[in-house]
Image 1: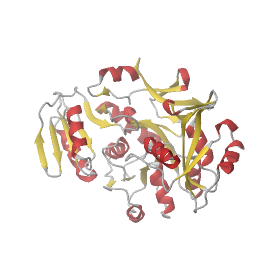
Image 2: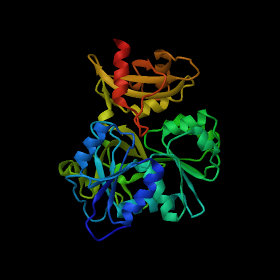
Image 3: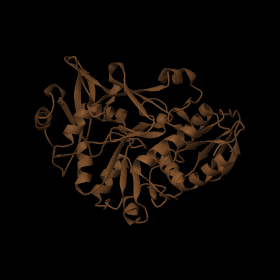
Image 4: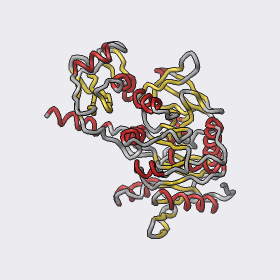
Length: 393
């Protein structure tokens, strides 16, 4: 998997099935890979190639040398783009050692063997899909790769007993009536999952493992609140979450100042906030830059969304803040109603106030047919704000 020579960076703009094959070939040659979404518009692809400076580009139509290619440091396996929830995506440099450490720790926690087989329906240009490939590689089992998410194709696939999903995928599978009990484990990550969604799956006999991590940690490294072996978790000033261990990235490609701002003294200082309970389990409350301060009090959107998701008339929900002259910020809930029943603001406020402090209850509700999401499955918060502003104009 490694080579002693200084590797080139090879961009791979391919669907998942051929990408998996070319990825192995790039590593066998001693180079590093830059997997890209094959559906990127030409302008976006050109911008990424200019920023990340690979030496070659491989697409479905062939291979081309690129001008201005820059080498990567020895030991680098891959450069993976972050999901880009805010600003431009960043190229995260991950080493072979870090990827192996994360895959081995995950396989150990899940007690995987060569008899287990993953169904991979996550794109391989994201870290979640890559980790499925790497865990399979580690135990010597070939994954079943789907080039796109399709509920009925998953329903028909019977020769796999493990699957990794983002919450939206799990919701779609449950709504489609797909029997997920045949999977020994359903790993759920990539975005916050409401307690109601997990409980709905568990009520059907599905074994769900909630994961927390990010591209910078080679994917999920905390399972059901418990760090994987070798992974360290700390809560720093302002309840910010810091992660340590052999799974950390080398840095952001061509962004040394940004790297230095988040990697300090062997810790990755995340933008997430959370707490560690008496049992040592991590509870993630959300991103620091998404915290709402209303009337001088902090509100974690993820906490409020989890409560709202338990309301019988709510199918999906997202919570965010907007400017308010009186309160500083106002809590807004974007709701996808269940069975065409539109819950009122009063009903939702009363529901929240029965479970947590009333100041956390939404002061505004907007109704949507579906929550806007990025390709990674994470909420598109910029689109949410646009929908909200359009509904008031």
